[in-house]
Length: 133
Image 1 (cartoon, helix red, strand yellow):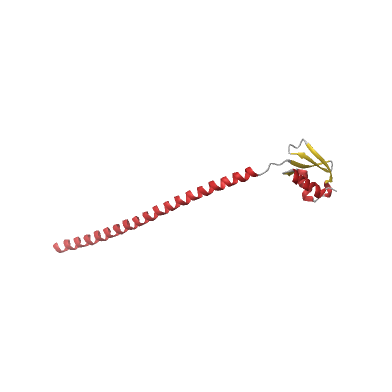
Image 2 (cartoon, helix red, strand yellow):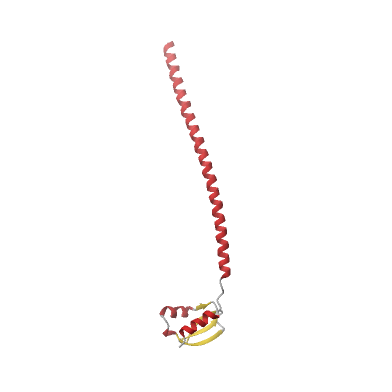
């Protein structure tokens, strides 16, 4: 009986040793994983900050570019088959032209029927020079 008890104790000792070894290995592996996890979180936070800075810079650039764009001064509209020039309010006529709408390229006719905007007087006069007879 003493021998059987000793064998049982030996097996229990081996089993407990194995169990403790597995547990220690698991805890060590978990510690390494946890450290890697913390490093990844730190890197992600840095990337997030860089992305936010880039977005802010991009937003400032867009704001500047929008503020630099010129407002439209004139609009070309079709009136009785001819091209007329109005201020952008579409009510105040600036000038009548002798440009017949049907003699213009199709895509330009469409733009004028919808209202072709001109940024400046120079752009307007350039258009009139190109298409007046």
